[in-house]
Image (cartoon, rainbow, N blue to C red):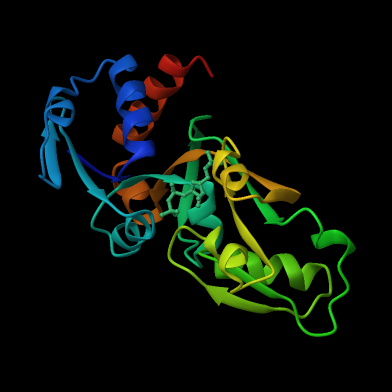
Length: 208
Ligand code: PRP
């Protein structure tokens, strides 16, 4: 039995399709209501959680495998895992975004940057030698500049529709993101064959 933690929402939809293409019967996931744990044939148990919590479940050895975005992996300190596969879905980019005049503006104070990804944001500006104030927002980060809370944001951009709808533009697109399959190191040690078989099936379905 392999236990998997999957990020709810967009990743869940795309990975469900990939697992079906890999030959797994995902009916239970397709038909699930508010359940959070689903067992599927071929000895898989899938738990559904928020992205950061997928890391927590792996960290504590609750699950063997996680399906999680590169954005979440980069934001967290967790390093005790092996990345086994890039599923090439859930593709988007990290970007610095603001109003179009941001680049020409002169700031006589520390810039304020809103982000849900405060570690990524800190690293981005530290690498560029800029001392900025990072303000944490939990979602709808685009509100930062729109309501005057921040000068810019660091966020993920997929279609760019949210930025556009709020009068914002990408200033710097700096890090590509996609969904990864990761295994906890301890699980990998004890369930190596089972885990590699699952990855091989996904790889074949995916045409990697
Ligand atoms: C993400 C991100 C942007 C949006 C980008 O938010 O934070 O707001 O998607 O997508 P787009 O470029 O296709 O418009 P998400 O929908 O995950 O929710 P959140 O705002 O609650 O974080």
